[in-house]
Amino acid sequence: DIQMTQSPSSLSASVGDRVTITCRASQSISSYLNWYQQKPGKAPKLLIYGSSSLQSGVPSRFYGSGSGTHFTLTINKLQPEDFATYYCQQSYSSLMYSFGQGTKVEIK
Amino acid sequence: EVQLVESGGTLVQPGGSLRLSCIVSGFSFSKYDMHWVRQATGKGLEWVAAISTAGDTYYRGSVKGRFTISRENAKNSLYLQLNSLRAGDTAVYFCARGGEGYYAMDVWGQGTTVTVSS
Image (tube, rainbow over all chains, first blue to last red; front, side, top):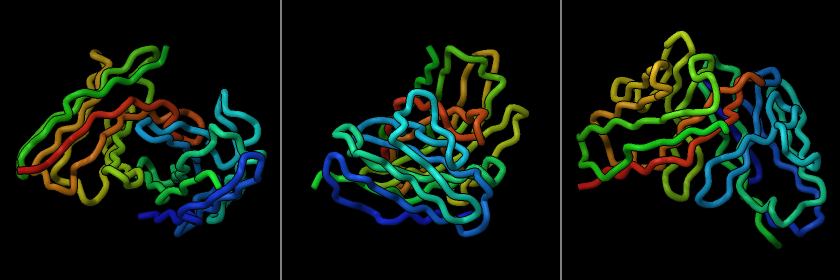
C-alpha cells in the first residue's frame, strides 16, 4: 500500500501570509496527487488534481507542485475562508487510494 | 446540478450489519468510478472502497471481507454493505465520484453517520 505523509500536522498563520504544506509518498506516484480542503462538519472539497491543476472555481492563490514522491500545496495571501484542514491523496494505485493525515491551518 | 446523497447511517451493535446508499443525480452515473470514504470524529479522511465503471471492486485492508461495495446503474445508486461491524468502524461515511482529472474525487456527498456501539 502507498503511504502518504503530510507535514506539518498543524500550523498557525495570519491573513495575508503564504502557507506551504508538504506531502510525501512512500513510492513514486508520478503526478497522481490531489489536494482537498475540509471545513468542520462539511464534506471535503477538491482543490487541486494531478499535482498542479486547479479544480474549476478554486481561487488562483492555491498552487500545487511536485512529482514522484514529494509534493507541496502553497496558499498565497491567506484569506479568512482558507482556515481549514487540508489533505493530500494519491490516485496512482488503481482505485486503491490513500490520504495523508491532514494539516490544520489555524488563525494566529 | 451534480448531487450525491447518502443515507442509511444509524446506530448498530457490534457484529451487526448495515447498508449505506448513495443516490446520484446530474451526471451519467455509469460512466464514473465511485468511492466510499470515512472519517471518525476528530480524525482524518480514510479511503474505504471503490468500484469501477466495469464493476471491479477495491477495499482497504481493514474492511476487506466485511464490507461490500456495489452499484446499480439503472437506479443511479451506489451501495456499501457493512457486515461484522466493529467500534472502529464508527464514522461519517461519504460517497464520492472519481473524476476524470487524474481520477481525483471531484464531487462528494454530505455524509451519513454510522455508530457502532452496544
